[in-house]
Image (tube, rainbow, N blue to C red; front, side):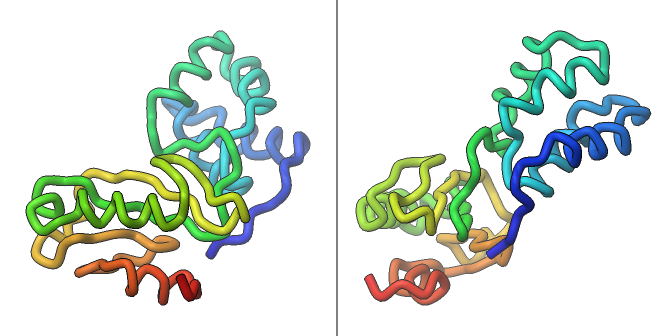
Length: 156
């Protein structure tokens, strides 16, 4: 579980200033924004565009192209489920369906209580112990619904 700062335009300006001189600064700025705020707010798009002398469309395109960037705050827990072939071969697709049904969410969604965000990833390098996941950044192998519940502190 990661605690993020609330959105703050002044802090965003500071992040932009810290990275604007880097070659290809767009991605480092968006990574730093997401690390600080948990997402890259729409309000940051014109700020980044102005600082880098790019169009808002260019920044928006970059933000929406890469699936790791969030435009909305994530839940208190972020669960990244591996969808690569090795995990699929040991039942990941059925497990993912069970998890999404139990949490009543689809990919890139957060539970109604704001606790859990589910995101797909493609290969975590845990191919020998699938189905695999990252739960709040920690790798978990041989994932099942019970193991996920325990990791999230949920009873069902």
